[in-house]
Image (tube, rainbow, N blue to C red; front, side, top):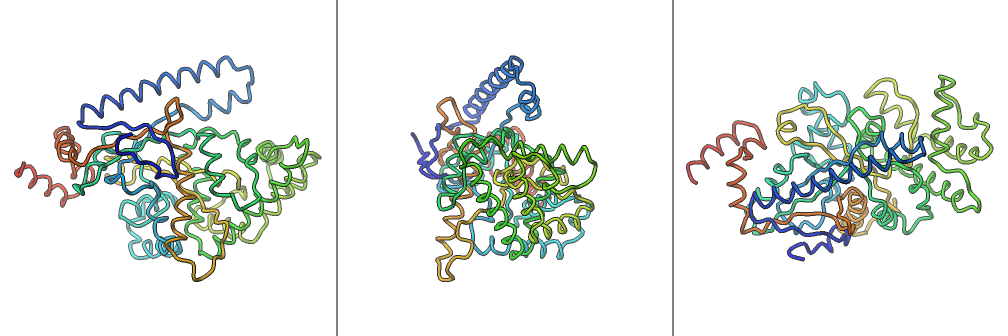
Length: 423
């Protein structure tokens, strides 16, 4: 395959599409959407013919498959990880960077209603965050792939909102190869779609965790790992009939019926009691309580309910349109959850580059769960040879996709005017 020596991105197999012009790219993207339309129609027909009403309702709530695009100006990056995970010092000081930025420019965030709004603004002002920029507009992604003349081939990756089960298995092997965590915990989640809005409770939990002090967030991650390992013991038991998804839904229904908080220990379902007691211990642990307090300081009242299993998977988050750049770029984000480091207390003399590489591999494997694939389960990507970048940039400019559109401010508009007289 040309160009895509994608033994990068954790050795993921890719279907390579070489792009030599804007017209070529548009044609290939149109073919993708045609395939997607057929897939969605077939999925709907299969749902209509499915006699399992509860599963049908769940799938309908997941909605249709959608496509998202990410352009990178160099195929040699060999990862699509957010900037936060590419540098060990950035990762270690995530909460400090966030809180320093808010303290320095409080007026910038006056219209923000939650932490994902704040992270989105920080991302657009080049602060390293755990958000991965995506767009629903394939032309915007193409611009980012050809933006720089750096003698490197550009690339556009294609993501979607449905998790790939095979890729989840690969990610679990990378994340938990050294830990006693059963894949069955995640397989029975029955979550198909990753899409969340900016007011999702799960999104608020994960973005609030990013603002906590490093010591507190590490304590919470240890509690999540303890829960995973405890839950795995029940899944390895013979004739185990109770799954976490079922137990969690039973608890939520019980809360709704009683209209007040209760302990999992109050639920008298013999088959689920041990699993629910395990969760009760997690929910009442000091690091978890500290996280709830952090959320309440930011957003007011918040039910003390976390689904720790869902925290493993990345989410596609649609932000509010809080600035012109997000609007023009038709941007949305992949929110990368907490990193499950099998060695949370490594030796002080461990090479930071080694730590960063291991973390990047773990994170990349989870990002890969949302790659869009063809029938052969190869992820789809488009490569743009470096010799074609200038030509395609001009073609994009002719239809209004230029630097001043992507970055709407006076400086970039002036650059576009000046460039127009050079061409």
